[in-house]
Length: 220
Image (tube, rainbow, N blue to C red; front, side, top):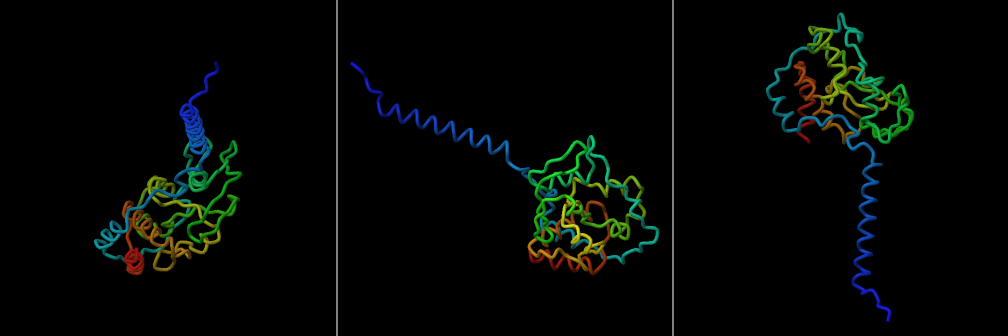
């Protein structure tokens, strides 16, 4: 006499198979997922930035006399054949593929400053949020070359970000009193980044710069 498998057992097996398939799919998606960060380090909060600005006494900006980008050596080697620029391109992009020399040969990058998306690394600049010339005028002129090199290659603070090249070139060495990202949704984050970098590196602010930052952060 043949015995039929109880219906409950069939259901149990099916549930087990489905659960295993779901677990496998979840694992596969984790393995194939794009880099989770795809952005610079998180800056200090708006509240912390406002609190710091309340302690800042504006100072007249220094001159660019003696300034040269060569006094801020970049891009430094991070590991192997990868330098700071290539490391930021990898960090800020999605599904970035690099060749044996660490150059990005494919991927996708979203430029937070203007909302454009690019698939060629050549369309991107790595922006120093606090520009090198701005840093020079704000106190870096008295630093050692070693300290300026650390500043120009700072991956720990939100000082470096991959953005559309011509937007970065339009920004130049302007501070927030004269330039803010055209994408208004990013201005709060940008102000937090700026304050974070200036606070950490002990750089001064002029009155127009501070006023602009306060105005942005009060709206965050």
